[in-house]
Image (tube, rainbow, N blue to C red; front, side, top):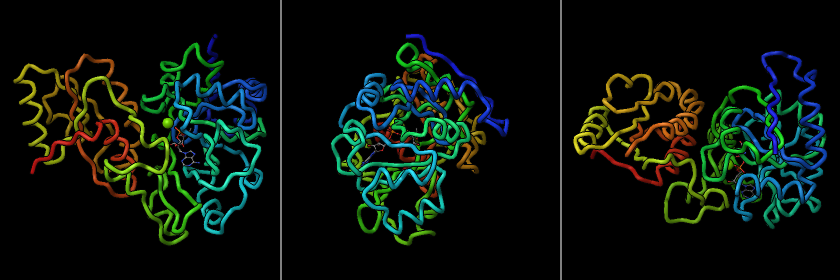
Length: 347
Ligand code: TXA
Ligand code: MG
């Protein structure tokens, strides 16, 4: 299968006028699988009401079938057609943060493909804010199931090039809208329980949620390795580069010693560093991932950095550690998964 690349320059205000989106929309309507940019990461879309189309997503990604998909809508009114009820707190959150990087888990109505819900009685729904995603969803005018557009287990794609690397020949096309903004996937919030429960930290922080609806809990399994996460997708290994990755928690002097010790032992060392510390580390390949003082910049380039290590022949990778505060919650959640919970602490 030839994978088309449709370039859409979203610096233009009027993305709606792009003929490339017409082609992508008509293929989606016909039951094909198309990748498109969102403000978080690229998604791999298919008609959520079409079983066969949804099945193609799982095949293209090599995704386990017990992992449900998020349904994307281009208009908040479409929510009523997908779920049994919208509790008041969920409604308030849609008003505050949609369109945006927040997925709400609600009781699903029948009619959504079983493949989307993986047989659960709930469904995750979100309305993305990326202008290209919104324009495409509005043109298709169908709920679109879309997981991140990576091969299962790889870091989520933040550029069309990442999608192409993973899925060329496996899907009909990719809408290229440049680099995504947030760089990490949406926050997933279960609104079927009280208080609502964060199943996956993401672009909307716990504090932002609590500002609107009061107390919110965090799935404890996200913090402890032993517990079984409530969100099926959170139990899988993810994002890991080819060489073993360790998070190094401590001062940058400790990081430097750790790197040098490995090099003395003959290892080729990769380092994930922030801009501030770049020149301080003697690694064989030091990749810069944002500024320490600017969490958004770290989130935006994390997946690209993790992918970049695979272009080098390394024996081990050390990453700086970050505060689990605000967006840092999501950054550390992904980094710890990528490292398979391997953390080296100074104390
Ligand atoms: O930012 C995002 O959310 C991106 C973009 C493309 O929108 N999508 C994304 O989808 O990250 P995916 O499939 O890679 O991750 C969806 C996560 C998985 O962890 C899945 O288990 C969880 O959401 N999920 C989906 N439906 C669920 C449900 N009904 N109950 C619990 N968890 C659910
Ligand atoms: Mg994913």
